[in-house]
Amino acid sequence: MRTILQAESVHSMNAVFDIANLDDTATAGTGAYMTQIDYSVGGELATSGIASEIDAEALYEKCMVLAHNLWWSWQPEVTNLFRDIDPIRWRQLDHNPIALLREFTPERLAIRASEMVLHSRVNYAYRRLHEYLESSNTWAQTNAGVLGSKPVAYFSAEFGLHESLPVYSGGLGVLSGDHVKSASGLGVPLVGIGLYYSHGYFKQALSGDGYQKEEYFETKVEDLPLEAALLPDGTPLVVGIDTRNGRLLAKVWRVRVGRVRLFLLDCNVEGNRPEDRELTSRLYGGDERTRIRQELVLGVGGVRALRALGITPGAYHLNEGHSAFAPLEVIRERMSDDGVSFDDACREVSQATIFTTHTPVPAGHDRFSGALIEEHLGPLRDQLGISHDHLMSIGRVQTSDPDEPFCMTVIGLKLSRTANAVSQLHGHISRRMWRTISQSVTSPMACTLKVGWLARCSNFTIGIFLPTGKRIWVSRTFGNSSTAWTPENCGRRITHSRIFCSPLFEDAYQGSAADAVRAMRSSKQRAVS
Image (cartoon, rainbow, N blue to C red; front, side, top):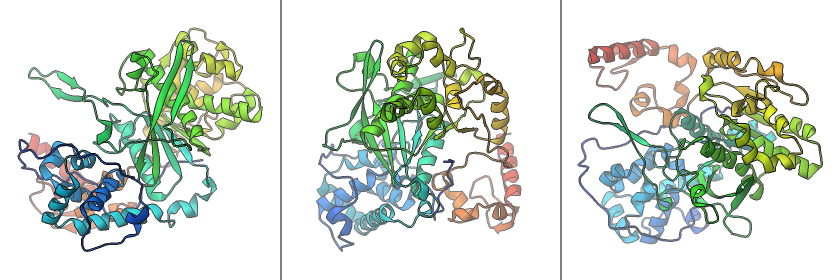
């Protein structure tokens, strides 16, 4: 089924709310305040209502509950609330509310809240979060009831949710983050599976002679909205994956993104070898062996984590080939649970799998040698009851070519019911790039190669989650409702004193939205020249 989601229709957007001329050298902070807080919304705090005054501990706990659900990141009022606690530190801490709150004691936070009259705003934001999480009046209740208790499992190597959680590098992560946020807004039952990178992706700058410099920063788990995923008996979840040269372990973190649960696997756990504890420290770092081990943890480990948590997905969505080992683990589960053959399990699993491809050039798709595949998937292959050549053929365009490496995109295409590209042009490129796969697929691989199957729709492209996609000046121009961004409204004649709140527009402009964009481009070109 399709899991490409539409953005939630909301009244506001997320933007960076900074005071432009703050003195970055100023400091505030008195050390971290540590406390045990239940970050779920419920209990007495959820039902106490708005009071004229609340004690310091309750205020602190409410702020922490808000900070530990990334719902706040697309709510400008809540973002402003955190910023107003300490605008300077807010900017210095990369807009991280947990890191900011840990510099305050409950008593000091209460004093600051009294100075800035924040008590009612905290109560209001807390109540809104509670109502949002408890609401049953969602789009999915009416239109996606077929999912029921079996959610969509969405696998991605990146999730761009907010800058304070640096587990993304670019467009792939932004798409995944928007997908999760949209699922939350629509009420679609979806769980995300990714990896936790303690060093994230590098930050870059230009040196004096014009060369790029990369720098990694280690993040602190206690400053992030992460909670250990727990088994029913209350013990932290750790999954294991056997390879030919040892066992890989990964603990599982949980991130609350509105109504959606995101699980991130982390190999920095006791029991792993020192080099394996660094396996998930950096996004897109290391050599081929590092990459295949990361992708083994993401795909196979992700499926095992869901099973251990009692989550039975109704569909699997693979966002790019990094997680394409996941269907193999699901096939193994079906064979073990139902006693079916590899061929039958393969057909069943492929009918519940969707694949999204992003990369428009052949060199950008991960490929691994037969030796690396056997080293890491050998134990799984034994359980599947297939030969090494059979496994390699699933990841090859030309199945009979012994010199062709194993391609993650190819296995993703072959083991999915349908596939899609991310734009109309990309659909044309991808169909041309992989046009020979369907000719090389033989039974029982039920490959229905439909790369760009949505490209037949005119101007199809991956959309954005409007609350984080709109800048503040765009909202002021077109209004706060996302319904303003309809084909009818975008083409109509509009009049504003300043159609785009940008320094480039010094004069009033009157015309269509398309004319305004052209005028903005011309203004930028004049400014550059």
